[in-house]
Length: 171
Length: 279
Image (cartoon, rainbow over all chains, first blue to last red; front, side):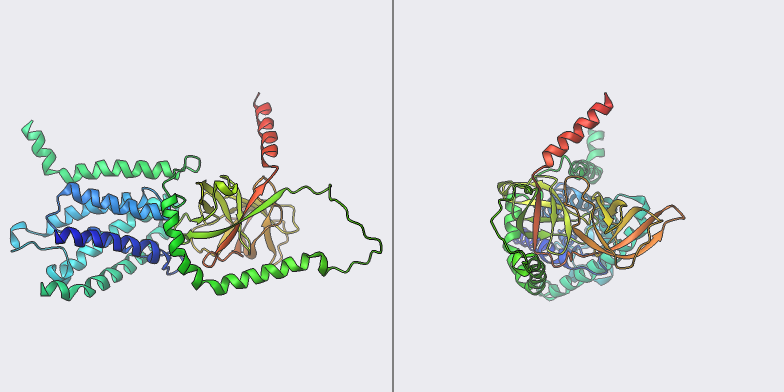
């Protein structure tokens, strides 16, 4: 129950943060952080796939509604959710942990979380920005946007995780 | 049957991916069409309303810049007032002006949401069909051109800004007869490119780029920006001119929607031309 509440709160908070604040944070003219993907990254391991995909789709659509890009963020988020299941299946052994772990920095350790966040952020940003431009002739420009935005997003993900780091450790 | 079920449940993530991908890509493609633009965007009543609330804070933070541009506009309007000209005629009488009919009307409206950073950018304003705004009208700001109305609801409209890959505004260098479409290449929101200008044009630095007045959307001579630099692409016979926009999209708060009273008449005539050519 608490888990559902935390995640619902996280959903609202991240969407609000994204559409009201982060959308206006710009570096080098065109690069924005997309911190809202943290919601999909932090869903608990035992989330069933249908719920995972539905939630990813929902958060994508919510961001889309506020940025006039219906379907764009949703597409990228659904792809992100799929790669999340792949990465978790490859790297996490199900019988290895004692009591319901979550894919957070505090529980899974820095190394694992860093690669997890890095790969998924790159995948999400790549699909998001490629679908937005949809032109092969601008691929260099798009790729540089992917990397700079990813860097920006990753920094924010780690800041967010470090802020809530201690609270979870105590529990 | 059991094997099939096992197969599906083993790869269920993949099947979910396919289902949701189909839904979202359908939305994406449908929404990208200018003509079929759906109502699920920020000109929607609820989302427009939320943005209007949040915008109160933004408006306060930008007061300095807005005041500045409004003051400048006031000065230029003052300069056009009758009282600022010396009247040297002796006989005066009131003349009802029957020669000039109002062709363009301007509707003031406030920007409640905008994007600058995407490849395709939009603005949302707080006037809609109630104020007489229709799809396809031109939009300018105090400093210059902004975009074209894309989608309208009762109280809000969204504007396809000039920073969009499908926006092509016919423009020309002030004082020259040549015109061409204006394109945004998606790199810097302060610069756009004016293409298709023949390279025999003797281009002065800092020349003003204005709307050409062709078509029905914008009046002639609305400022777009100032020539930054010009180059010939790949030895062709056309110049690609980089134009610094005069509109600062970061600070824009108020815009004017342009209503052309003779739009239908001109369009009906031009459509009739096309039809008679086809016959």
